[in-house]
Image 1 (cartoon, rainbow, N blue to C red):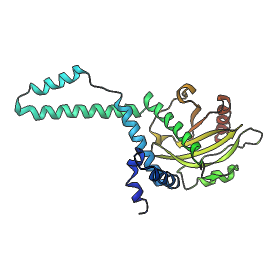
Image 2 (cartoon, rainbow, N blue to C red):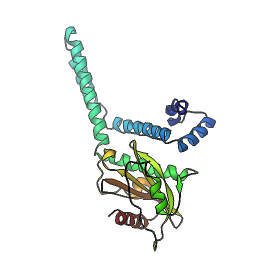
Image 3 (cartoon, one colour):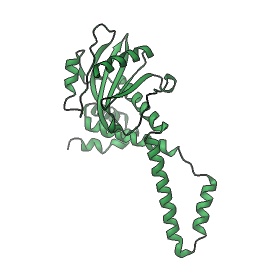
Image 4 (cartoon, helix red, strand yellow):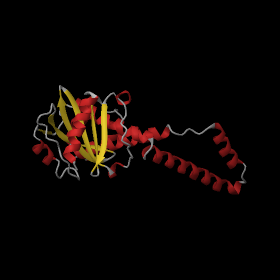
Amino acid sequence: MVCESWKAKLDTYVDGELPEQEMRAFDAHVRSCPACSADALARVQMKRTIQVAGKRFTPSAEFRNRIQKSTASKPQRRFRLGWMLAALAAVILVVGTLTSAYLGSRSGRDQVFSEIADLHVAALASPSPVDVISTDRHTVKPWFQGRIPFAFDLPELQNSEFSLLGGRMTYLAQTPGAHLVYEIRKHRISVFVFQEGSLRVRLDPRSPTKKDLSFNVETWSRGGLRYFVIGDASALDVHNLAELLKRAAA
């Protein structure tokens, strides 16, 4: 297939180790190829999840000594069994750490907001932040049909200061979703919509502070969908846009 030659270099690309000219070519390809962009994002998220999990547990000297003594004190004929039990305990510990880091924990929650911020910044830095360019919600909304496995409603913006610039597909935790870009007083605000159940992360209504992300952000769930509104506009502007979206989805 055409993308096989690109996919063979995905890990090198994600690690930023390709030559400059190849990096530019790969950037252009990823922006135009949903399959490769999804694979690249999935690998970045996997690396982040492993990094977060790795920081949650560091074996203490006492723990190491206890494991060494428990294996060294056994007769030779029992060494293999002791080693296997120790290895099994370590695997269970790592799996539990990975699970707690991703499901419902504060670190997993913060990781989601961090990735949402990354998606917002990446889109704004791109020369083509949207794939469907239109200020008409009746043009943007149908564009997503067949591209994402759910439907959503967009608000009417008459008598408001907001304008719709367009939309694009995006991915979070390997889950496809919608990315809408709005503008107010030269500030751009991203709106992300994903299926709630497919994210596998429990998010409480409390949003991270601007100090945490350098952006204002609101998130909520309605009708099985998870919404994120994020941008460097004022907290009031982000809130007002969120309210318009909530009324449209009601």
